[in-house]
Image (cartoon, rainbow, N blue to C red; front, side, top):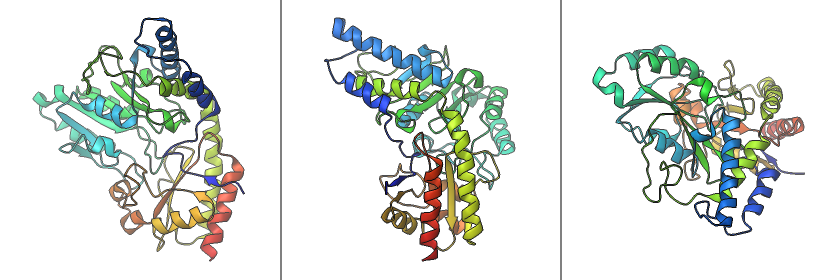
Length: 364
């Protein structure tokens, strides 16, 4: 049978529309900064992609700065600030930028603790506030738990500090408008929505500065130097256009996911689902079976024809205890949790087949 792919939070399969756009872009020589006809044609493609990404993210096209992906976008957004306030469950690319950060706790359900956030922000010295940014993810990549970004933005405004959100996992899976949330910066990644890896974007609120990490020819309006990844950007734009309307698919998927989890909990007495009682992305399930290591489960499912993961896939292929689940107080279960994440191509029957595979292995 066709293998089951349930690791979309790591990377989603390339959409046919993105593949077609990439192949077209690979034809004529194309540097969008060139003034001849080849360059002008490439520039039109880049700007069309910028419009598509902006429309999907609820921003102006002028707010979109293309990057090499979510990690660079996070680094770029945070580079201009001397102090970072963040949560205990952020992506490693934010945590690495914030080695001396003020850290906000999360609840046992994996939701950022708003009262602790209020206390942390209120405790900042007045002289530190102009150089401080609050950086919080919109949806966690391991648990799928959706964070109270609007409330956190309001707290940031009350305390006169800037705010950034890693929107990599939320884009196209749930309703999101950069402008409506009044964020200063947001990070996006193409390969999470069915575009190619190696391209992303940072959204910048009008009037905000962006401290460039790369110095050179002044591309992207001087905010990100270096010849644009024309082929990748073409694919990102096509994926963004194709992703319009995906939210309804993920809303339907949440029902399939819930049915899968209900079956696991009914037939596997030692199963535990993280974040089950709070809003989550419709495609994500993070569960543990007491006494079964995550690595063993991933390998067993792989042999059985189902690809899942143990936490984040952003640690050079290593399986390690999740800092996200540790922050949630998961104890030993943090090393026994696996992540199941569907995507734009996932069907109801895929979840049904996955349940059969899981239960078949458990009964052995």
